[in-house]
Amino acid sequence: MQYWLIKSEPETFSWQQQVQNGVEPWTGVRNYQARNNLSAMRCGDLAFFYHSVSDKEIVGVVEVVREAYPDPTAEGEKWVCVDVKARGAFANPVSLAMIKSDPTLSEMALLRQSRLSVAPVRESEWTYLCQLGQWQGK
Image (cartoon, rainbow, N blue to C red; front, side, top):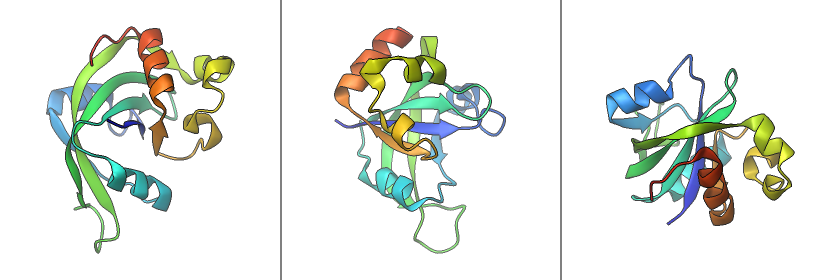
């Protein structure tokens, strides 16, 4: 099992839309490192759903339900997407400010590569953030 963080601008695609849509393709990634992270995702992996730009907080958890395939919104086959399904919302969203102020999370990819839209999360970070967000799922 691997853990990830995926970012979405809530004005473009929000957590509420993810929940409403059920399974959703995670399209539109146009950064090579983020693409490589999508390609590394496996069915059953979990990802934090992060509202970027305006809210800047982790709001829920999704599960990868289909591994990387060509992104239908891109020309050619160099860009990929995965399908994700909502697993549950955080009872207490965890803000970027909280993450930045917590020394336990100082090495998190979200902070070290802040513009990366798909980033890995260490298991220790995952467990800690799930506790902060009061997410009980497994």
